[in-house]
Length: 240
Image (tube, rainbow, N blue to C red; front, side):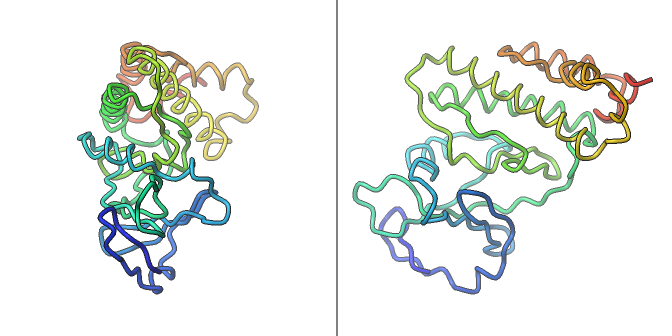
């Protein structure tokens, strides 16, 4: 495979890389590139330009220091860059999933990472970047950090910093709220079997209320989980 980097240098990606399949989605496929990195190759036939990482977003993200943000190391293009501002592939750090179940992570891990992600949200808002397409497939629950690995559809907004900040926190609270619901549905059927929809919604909202207030999110989560080793332990306590 032949690409060009941001300086229009020709880059040859060995065909053997395509044998190292890791994952795929609607927009592209991820392959292991070497021991500590992977490559995402966008689906040229089906992926619209707006679904590929914008060079300007990439440059803004490189200025942000956050362990909760994917480390993208280089962008590649099928043609030499002139007015081309969306990548056709990119190289990033490889992250290993440690916790397949969101509700079974240690409480300290969750609290520290939610704080870190809220801080990341603030930094993104300052750069007028809106969070979008937040879902379980787009994060890795790694050893020390929850890492957002798919900023393809994040975008610039003309709204004020305050408005963007509120919308980003709201997007995060909705994302974490869905993470709880999906974990209950996929991994804890024994817990929710026979329970009412009211119970499911209540315990989910008690952990991650739908809010645009970062302080409320942190205070609520800390209060609920103070005496529990894992989020799932808190939910079991509400079932009794």
